[in-house]
Image 1: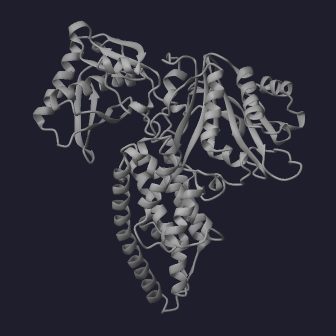
Image 2: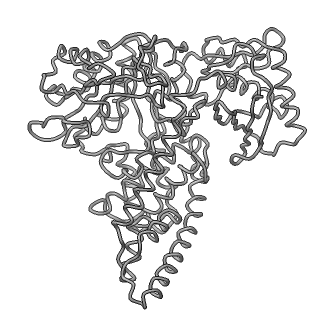
Image 3: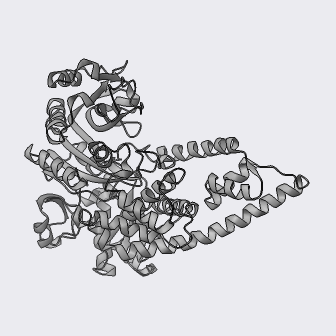
Length: 595
């Protein structure tokens, strides 16, 4: 089965089950400060999971492009990926466990042709706070799953959420495919990698965990399912890893051509990391993002530089990442046209970043030589081992993987304290993960009253920017918390103090006028005819929600958005711009507050 066939089968199946097909949202969450990238299909749907009405109805299906970087060091094995596609179907307070499980079973058995003997499922085992999910297990039994292939596992395996300290959460039931030979072993835990591959996950959001740690029944119960395209494609075609599928094979071949190296033995990890990282970087840059030292730009820079490092290990000494990106674009250009549209930008960014990193590598080699010289001077010329702190500094500061440092050490007849390095590295990982988890402390997404005010203020500010600076201004991104509004927009010049004052005064004038904020559902074409502004048009479905601020001859803003928003502008407070700066080429950034 091809990737195209799998995508089409999935969407057609759920279309027949009366689901509206919605397009993939951007990899950059529009109004969610809790995450850097869209890591799952649920992120763009947060307002609707919390009760807001979706323009396309209560049943949705999509294929969402995702980026996950929490396990970046695991990339290179058979299944971990940075970029992947998630097939999902959604019930927003409509159907429940019976329909979700029955449809999952039907699609796996009939449409994908998976034999019953190769399928196992797991359900939530229950604990002192939430009861055992006997309902899901009963449904699986009725469908014909034998008792010996139904497993009850704990929270680590069969519970989702909340993303923060409080929010929607619930049990899930997971489906596993047996990819090994002979009679499959028991699925003792979801982490068991002895031939069982998780291919689908149905999450039942039926609880709300309060800040006090209590689990209350949600008024709107949602179903959130996810099937990894790459992993499912691999098992359906009999591959034991995702890198043999059509979504990676041409990229692996391109790396072979460029490097002259064979895809075997110790080279396999390098090939896979390059393929994965440049694919992820290509999709990120297709959103208009550039590499930098902060947040999303830092993730992008790290992916590119890590790929270049492993390219050096394969013997690639030329600028090559743009060539790999072109192989990625050819694979996905029909599904994601934004890749071809931004090809020139992607190539330019990769060449620039790779050349910059080559200079960093040169400095790293010089630093290595200085450290070796110091070691020998301190030991009378008899130094035998490079200390772990030196090896880790080369990794963290100059991007040297331990294998590269080891190669240089070998040339100098030195060894590396690899055990000590791993301890340093583990400490670094724990700190990084703690920092990543901190991004989620606000919960599934903060929809407090103050955040709602800032969402509405963003509409006023965009309209004011377009009035003061010109109609070329479009939104390029935003990050909203309860403390402030951060807004990126297209403009090539630094704003003057006079322009900032005009924007502030215009926004505050519209707040004082206490204008009504009205939401309407319409087709995208109708929204365009009515003059609504919007971001990333290709991600919208057939129907959109348009928020209008003002009425009759006093309409100030008309924008496509998911919400939520204040009912009247008079509730917002006083608007103040606290900072205006460059964000990237041709993009400015404003930070503003309400006081």
